Length: 546
Image (tube, rainbow, N blue to C red):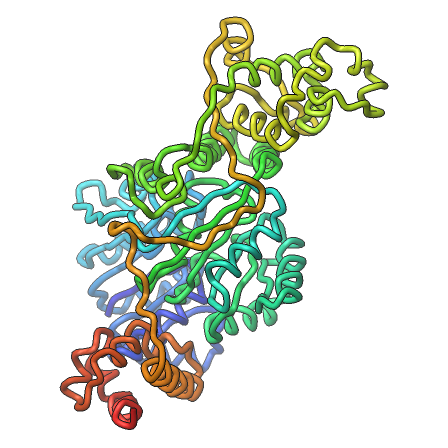
């Protein structure tokens, strides 16, 4: 029997359901089972009836389970989501550190560590902590060529999100990540009012309601989940067509993992993000205000800076993303906004000097809003009280609009020409790089932000872009819907998500190939021996009637 250590109960359930559908004798052992169910799983394991047993690290370390497992002949120990072992990672689970004790007892069983979101530093720590420093590493590409990346400046966040969904993914499943629990409920309710079927998900919801929402998302078509990062690794729905972020994630690893929920069936999908300087300030304040050691906070700041760099780059986003994970890409991916519509840059040296000078003249005690008012020459109560309307920099920035000054300050912070005082209220402070621009005239080039709320429908005309899904119409569309209806019926009878029976891509192949016999049906990708026996005749009957 193989033992799989997995961090999420919801993920275990989905994986075991899918394995059983494919004829694998699999089970899970966790806190959702009652004593009778646990005893039955133990009996199956002791009798050699299981191929795979899934267990959470917390259960693995409990004395009762440890005594039980130590009497079993294990053929394999697999550590899923192995980046959780890294204390420097974004999903650290201290229980994972106990896995080495298990390996000491089962020294003859191979140990396999698996992850999809580890940068070189995290990979190194996984090998060290699990005693795999001398073992081979099998690494495939981090590239997800079917995902199109788009990152834009937050202007009217909700409206931008709605424009994006309506233009590109109307009626399709998606996940929207936000930074706070309150936002999940507000935005889900707002989207629902606008005709988008949406539900909230966050750690503060009642557990039963949280499970209900997750079950609906997995089983229903066209559902959008608005969530915090609590809605994370346990989602393996293959036909999620988009992942959107209203706010910037803490790290490139988190961004990659969250966007990786999209397009798991290989069909085209989107990763869209809208962010602002305020998002960055909030996250930096959270990092600095955390209880971790200074080294941990410093690393968190570096990871956020790398994420901000991905947002602000004028180069191919796929190239930048893969470079973070130590993988080369020649750029020109034709699958990100920077490649499809290359951004323009401008010599912003004079604008930067004005911005930095305004920060200095106002005493380095104010944030972007007030400093921009000074640059635009706006007579405000705050400005008059501090005599800022009499400064030499008052009104020197009228050649740019407020939105353009917002962009200048955001990019100066991203490029470390300006610091944000996290102990105050997000006020700006100069640093050595600031003075290099002010006194030495160092050149500053910035990107032009796109016009506000200009959301364009996804275009993939370039031959190198990800393929479009086959568009079905007429009789083919009718047959496809008939197959979907049968799939939904079979899934409901077994209390399973529809995709566990067959993916949409398999149904499209059935429409395209029109198999008439079980032998022909077996050639459809995704049809194994168990599914052939279980579902073959039912689907053939629908196909024959077409």
